[in-house]
Figure (cartoon, rainbow, N blue to C red):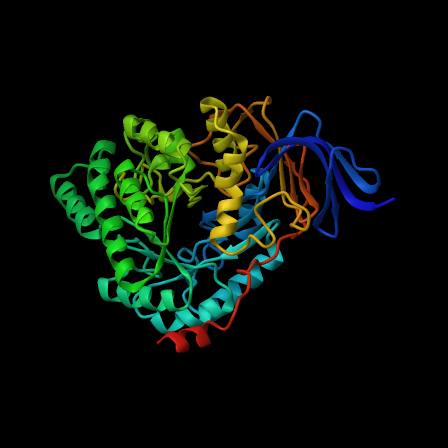
Length: 465
């Protein structure tokens, strides 16, 4: 009789082919068996009757600000929040730490902190900024998931937007390294000019902010990046896309055979510009929340499979950086705090729009794993894969409160929102880190995840130069 460390019994398991009631047996952090009924002993069992079991979410876009700005969000609080939302792997963006992740030394230091503190697994992005082109190969060789650059002003002196020459040179090198460049795609020329016009006129309302970051600014930047990709051969991943027009440009590029993927974020699907009007800076982000009609278009595009993945872009800061007593809406720090709620948002949309759960699993797990070379171990519920599971109850509602939100700072656009479903449990490589909806451990169960088949990036670059 086989012995297991953990058996998850009787759940509705979301497989790539559909949903099936099954038991999942776990040994040494891996899925060892999937069957209608497992015969065997287990050190621990989870009764998942009436619950759905999905592959743990892989959120490829979060901002934890450690080292240097842990008071914004660090690995401990950030990973607890991700675990509470059914996320078993996150990718941390390179820009808000001090130093930013633009050198190999910074990468290794951040990885050390993550290994010491994170409750769930993690990957790390490297940055492309003016002056670090020679750091790209060591970062790739060191294990970054890919690279991130901004086409709009960042507001962060440690991580500046790329100029055109840096972008083209960096894209050529990233292509030679076989890596992916993630882009924040808004035209700096358009957004900065419009912002200056508003500020000169003393106009700082929510409507004014939206008008400084129009859809055309996103579309222009996406189209320009695609042209540069055609010249350099660089694979692209467009982050937090907020408009149907930009998606159309990306779809056309895919149809031409270009190596490009696209994400949107939960807040663009659940909220719209009315929330910025009502709630102010906690709803400020870039690109901004769009008007309700554009929100509907994005939901339709998601349901139609036009987005490759869904992410949080969890981008927190202390509330005093958003406080309207001290800052107008243009001055307030931009970013949505909400990394705990992306899987719940996806499930809310699935229930409201009759989207099959296997599509949710693709957007939140298997597609990210495949795109960023983790599919040898993550992204699906299958024998031999890491035992990363999100256990959810589709009939039990969850209302967000400061008390059940695990982020360091509790001010969030999501406070007061009621999801029609709940995350009941999260399992990371066989370790139960969330039980009955609450984080059940403070142990750092997570580990740094590097892309599969990591080869010498320096040798690759030399061979292709």
